[in-house]
Length: 103
Image (cartoon, rainbow, N blue to C red; front, side, top):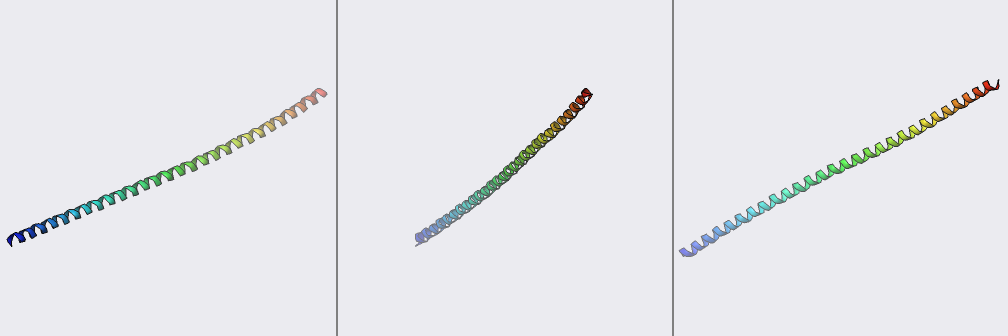
């Protein structure tokens, strides 16, 4: 009888140890899962920040292209106006010279 009680006590002790080991393993798995989730969230956040940065840079580049094109068009228009003015001056000077030479 004493041996049966001892075996039962040993079995209960082993079951308690097994139960505790399973709880510890479960806690470890939960911790690892939580760490993995946090790492995934952090990675996603970093990727979102990078994508927003890329988008902002793309918008800035597009704005710079637009401003450059606008500046080029303005220089072309200003040059065309200056050429027209110079031609008018040349024509007026030519008329004036021809008028003096014609006298």
